[in-house]
Length: 252
Ligand code: MF3
Ligand code: CO
Image (cartoon, rainbow, N blue to C red; front, top):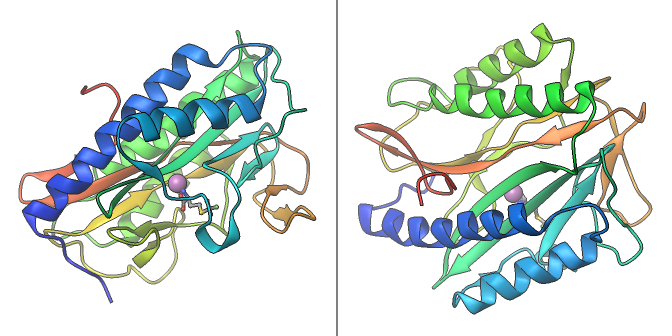
């Protein structure tokens, strides 16, 4: 069941989204060669709490940390660790959910340490393009499935692949609500996009094959072929005037 949000509820989610966007801006300054993913997690958690909010992922279905920090071939749900020291050329995705007064916002951003190789930079730019081009499809009258078609076209044109096992989702007072937002095309176009829907788009794009395997920790997914994986995610609200990104960094 898709839970439609009132303008007041969307406003509350936007406030959570602003804190989340500011957390990413803070990380953008802090993430550099020599930082550990555990330090990233601590900076994010402290910043979220200092803003009167809480990190919703911590304790969600037993997930132990405030953030997911996924490095290089890790697709998502990477555990922050004291012994994972980031070095020049690495690619890390930081994914967080902020809870402000019971309303949530969810956003992941990838960061390149130092310069990054040509391969890393191209994957980064293409994944970002997949997110922003697909957001344009999130308009009343389109269907949820139209989003994935755009993502898949952009990614596969570059020779990349789209991860299948993890999808975008409705969000509100819970992290995962209906609908599921696939990042690839299927024969099913899915539900119509309607005013008051709030959902994430969060494409995970691999340089190689889309297949993933799970680490022994039961959470962290990584590419089977060891290839690089990148992700960007926003939470958006559907309005009569089009999609509104609730977690945008550049608008604050
Ligand atoms: N933020 C994640 C998403 O985009 C949710 C991760 S749940 C966690 O769907 F428990 F792994 F944190
Ligand atoms: Co997320």
